[in-house]
Image (cartoon, rainbow, N blue to C red; front, side, top):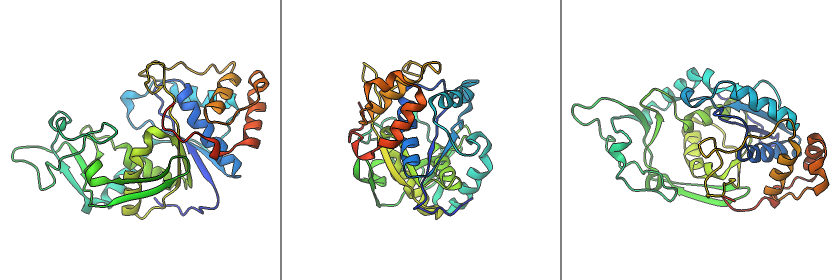
Amino acid sequence: MRKSADMNACRGRFAPSPTGPLHFGSLVAAVASWCEARARGGQWLLRIEDLDPPRCAPGAAEDILATLERLGLDWDGTPMRQSTRGAAYAAALERLADHVFPCACSRREIADSALNPQGEQVYPGTCRGGLPPGRGVRSSRLRVDECEIEFTDAVQGRIRQSLARDVGDFVLRRADGVFAYQLAVVVDDAEQGISHVVRGADLLASTPRQIYLQRLLGLPTPHYAHVPVALNAAGEKLSKQTLAEAIDPSHPAPALAAALAFLGQSPPPELARARARDLRDWALAHWSLERVPRVRAR
């Protein structure tokens, strides 16, 4: 499962969920990760995060790839698909067996537990000592030790989180048998040899969980950079659920220019009327992660 990664040789990735066509919020993450990898002379890989089939829209993955091509955001190798990776996730879960326990709790049953600053439920440890009498297994949870995870994010600065206090024991395999994002992303980043993860700041709070899993599995920890998340007029994250408008693949340059401006790169206005590839080349020549706003949402 593990591939050694030379941390001086940059390898980035973009990992969209195929729930619909590419929209501006996802484009921001794609542009930032592509520019950072290419500016470092590295590779840029794609991963289709189709881990949860009911949420995936037919043809969405192909539509996203076609739009990235029109934008000039070229990638290396064949895109990985999480839907083909079940055996790798199962093997990782088996390696974690000494740290995993069966849980009978439903979301409703822990709905009254404390909330962390991101509004997530903190697991109260109900099944840590064993399943309650007469209850069946619903999920597999990772037992979290009393420890603080610290790392330096290239955009957001120093991050510190107490997993036991702020998260609690977290799910690795859900009640429906689907492997959790936290486990899948750690296994896949290691398999693809990812050295630099550039993604939206909505995933910042989950990064300590991933670092904790990396340590337990003996996997390398990439460099992280979390860029601002694009919001709609109502202050909601742009997504399929909030009816985010799809990028027009027939006229992609304005969206690319807007994404670069959102990321603090200030492309010349006339380039918004140029070819997308010309704008992409300008972005590569002028890219600076230091100019990305140190905020979590805009």
